[in-house]
Length: 134
Image (cartoon, rainbow, N blue to C red; front, side, top):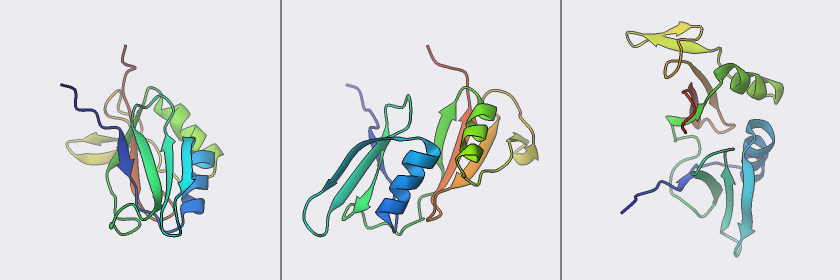
């Protein structure tokens, strides 16, 4: 039996602002934007190439907006990913790597090159470079 992680709910305070950030700035594809009643809305978006989507909305979870930390995306080219984020107005860290657990400037190769950014509510993301999987 497969156990597949398909959706992660990200708590946000302003659904339209978060939808704009994730779709127009970060580049996630909007799969669903549905309102059901006055207290429930779900927006599901998928990062390019990902099998796991992100959902934002109202009436989804009891987590405080901005409380989700440690979300991670993986890319094959960290410089291209950082350039995309910068070009789309996302405040993103310089490329960093870790030496003995301590962050250092510059790339460190596959599995050890990262950039970091927060969404408008403060949910924190890491982007890691890793080789493409076949």
